[in-house]
Length: 596
Image 1 (cartoon, rainbow, N blue to C red):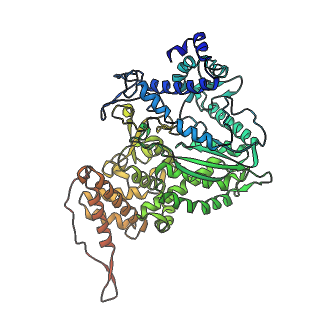
Image 2 (image 1 turned 60 degrees about the vertical axis):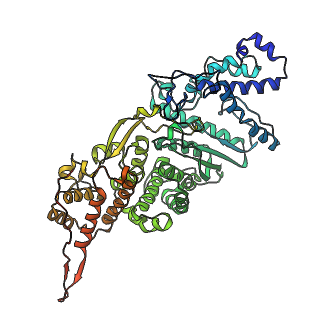
Image 3 (image 1 turned 135 degrees about the vertical axis):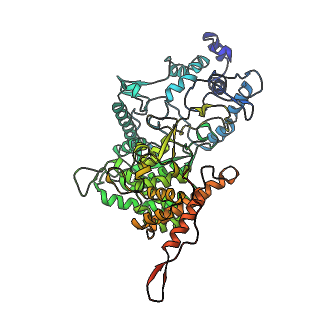
């Protein structure tokens, strides 16, 4: 293979064999060499758990490593030539069967997706588009490009033309074309322009797809991203191009053992949106009717997804597909009670809140499936935003660290921001930078990370994590006003009331506990009692998974159970001989203890 980089000599050597054979063998050798490059760079860490060498692209970046290890390419070991080429050749039988099964000859073209295609030619177009600002593909591509440009030189005129430039294609300002990614550094550090260029470019691509499809054709878009902006931009582009979403499927496409999935909330599923051309006679819709239609269609899907085990950010975005059926069938959706039109962002906010209410309903009921949701769906609708967020976060991450990207998604779904959680409501605290995720100790499975994995970080704080504050930690603003008043004169969240009662009860002041419960009418507040019961169930589950079955952050479960019993006992009424109602007496008193 080394001689293949010799220009004229290599071309003469290749000429002795049939052109198709040369190209096929050269392609397999180049792929094996690329794989070997991934295991031979100065960014590799040693995987101590299995005593093996790591690889370069465990994540979509090229991080600096202070200590690195080296493979032995000539040996039959991990990172060696024989191992790398062998892994590539495993695809040969699959490709052979695929070639035999189809009557059409594959035709790979190197061209811009914004170029015009043959009108009305295709039955289906399947695309896995760039994921907004998640991955700088062309930058990472250069790691391999410069080697491929040398090793493949002279194999064919087409390949030489494809590698004619020193580096892989970026964005061309003059041609207004190139890699579609929201990267402000390519647009003079203008973030607004960068987002607009991405959306306009995607709309141009989808417009070409619409023109190239037969009238009954379908376009399938594969997408996986936790950022609300990414989905809003993608959906806007699809609708602008004249498509309507008429089906969607969440498919588990991501490897659970990849670096991006370890200790994070990286998406495990991709959402496959099936789109058809919108009718030329489609008329404008009204927001109230569209939202109502969305609610009626999405209910059954949520039950299916929940029963299928789809959870976390996957669950929120999996519901986006079926919800879009109601919205995207109209070229525009007008507001019934005001001027203007409903934006994609406004519609998706309705969708996210509906999904959050469903999940919170499941948490409140403590049951899975349709029955559990039916019991607590109405209750979740009435739940305030901070409490809904707390239950959503606690259900998925407990009191541990959560990637800030997921926190932002959950907060937006509840009508909040990550800053609201930290500064306004003091429900959470930022833990810091999770840069250790590049460390060794990472065992691969399948080696390759999937293209649809996006960074957990989110805008401006990639890699950092956020955790909920424990009830005993809310001692800032909360020390004097938690449970009594809320910022800006807003209603006091139920989670604040629960934490206030827990603090009073832990201090052993039962008189103040009863006074607080009676003053705010909490003994007969069913939703308040459901929140407490939900926290009991969640904390029990967390204790069961903790080391040694212990709650290392205080016996929250016992405290909540005692508080629940106290509310039930003092809230119960019995009939007296005179026909009057009186309270029963308390039969259990906690040992006074200082708050943690």
